[in-house]
Length: 386
Image: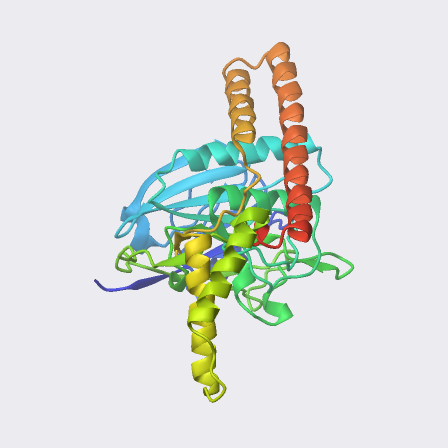
C-alpha cells in the first residue's frame, strides 16, 4: 500500500478582520491539505470547500472533497469532521476557554469534548487540534508529552495533560526539538510569547506516522497566532501486534517478612557452602558462582512471577474504582441537565460536579503521598510499581 502524507494545519485568526483575500493564497502557497481556521462569525468566504459553524472553518482541498463522510457541530467550541482514507480519520477542531474564564466554562468544554471522543471507536484515528489556551510545561509524561516545550504551566495545562492521559492522547508539538521560532504559537502586543495551540493524536496513530509538527513562521497575515503545521503519514500498513516479551522476576516484596528474609539468608548460605568460590577462580568464574548461589536461594525462598515488558504503563494509578464511579455519576447528571436544562437540574449537576472534582483531587493527592511514603520506607515492595 502506498503511504501518503497529508499537511494538516491549525490557525486561530479570530483577531483578523477584512483580510479573507490574504488567507486563501497563504494556504495555497504552503500546500495545506486540511486546515482548521477560527475566525469571527461574520466571515463567509473560505478556502475551497468549507464547513463553517460559529466562527469555525474547515477548509479542505478539492482533491479530498469526496473523502469527507460527515461533519458534526458538537458545540460552539468543538467541530468534528470524519474523513475516509485507508481508514476513517476523525479531525476534531477545538477552541478552549482562556484562563480568565470561569472554571465552570472550562469543565463544560472538556465534558463536551469527552462526549465527542466517546462516540469514536477506540481503533479509529483521531487528530485533535486547536487553541487549547493551555500551557503544559516541559515535564515529560511518558506517552503523553515530551520535553520540547516552554517551561511554564498553568491550570488549563494541567487539565489538558490529565485529559490526554485519561484518553491516551499524544501532544505531538512536544516531541520535536525545533528552534523557538518554530515552537511558539502565540505572540501578544508586548511580544510575550506562549505555546497554546496543539496538534494531538490518539494511539491509533503510530509515532512514526507523525513526521513533524511546527509553527510555519513564513505564513503571516497579521494575526497574533501562528499557523501550526502537522505533517502526518496516512495509508501506513496496520502494525502487527507484537508478541508479549515475558521474563521471570523474584518476588522481592516477600523480603518484608522476617521469616522469609531469614529463609532466604539460610538458603543462600547453603548454596554458598555447596558451591564455594575457590581461591584461584577467575573473576568471571567467581561472579558466575555468586550469581548462581544467590539466584538459587532467591528462587527457593521467594519464588518467581512472570512479567510482561510491553504492557502499557499505568499512567493514572490513582484512577480507582471510586473515581470511576463518581465520574460516571457526574456524567449522568450532566446528560440529565442537557436533556432538561432547568435551573434545578443545573444546580444538581453543579453540586455533584464540584463534589466529584474535589474528591478526585483528594484521591490523587492521597495516592501520591502514600506512594512517596512507601518508596521511602519500603525499598523492596514499592519499587516494583515504578
